[in-house]
Amino acid sequence: MEIIIFCFAGVALLSIGYRFGRWIGDMAAAKRLDSRDREHFTAQKGFKQLYEQEVSQLKQENQQLKAQVEALNARTEDYRKKAAGLGGLFSSGGKRADAMYALLLENEALEEALYSQNEKLKQERTDALKEQMRSTGYRRVLMSQLLNDDRIKGYVAEVLADDRKLPPPDTHAADDESK
Image (cartoon, rainbow, N blue to C red; front, top):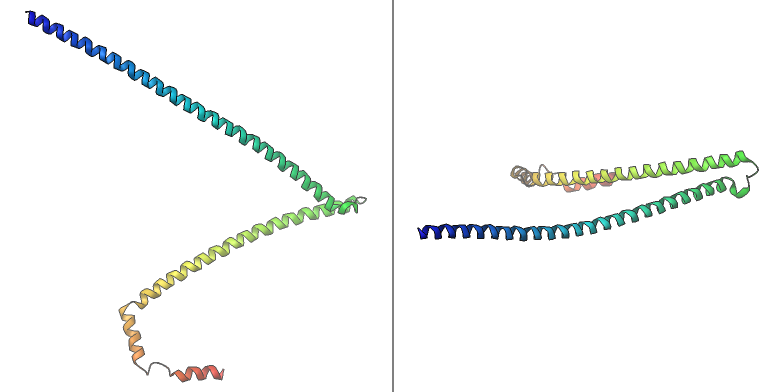
């Protein structure tokens, strides 16, 4: 009977020890998870700050570039007006200055159209050359395969062996001299 009581006491102690060990292990795992979460949060917070700094710098740079573009457009417009007035020569006649200004704008539009057309033609020429190179390579492969065919080799050898089928070498030179 004492053995049974000692067995129950041993099982109870083992059970309590097992639960106590699990409880300590759970606490340690929770601490590790908490420290990893803090590290992850710190890194994530740092990346977020870096991202926000980059975004704010880019927005500021974008605003500066927009201001520069507006200033350059205004200067271009002033130069157009000055060129249309030819430095004040047509300042008394507003119609002539307006006509010169309209001509300048039309000239710029035509130059842009010409540039885009030239770019398009350049691309078409490049594409045509690529296609021509591809087709030349294809023909070269075909000729190579054709000349490697045994039947064609035999026919060429037969023609070269038969002197009656080949024109005499002097007749070709005589034809060139008579022309």
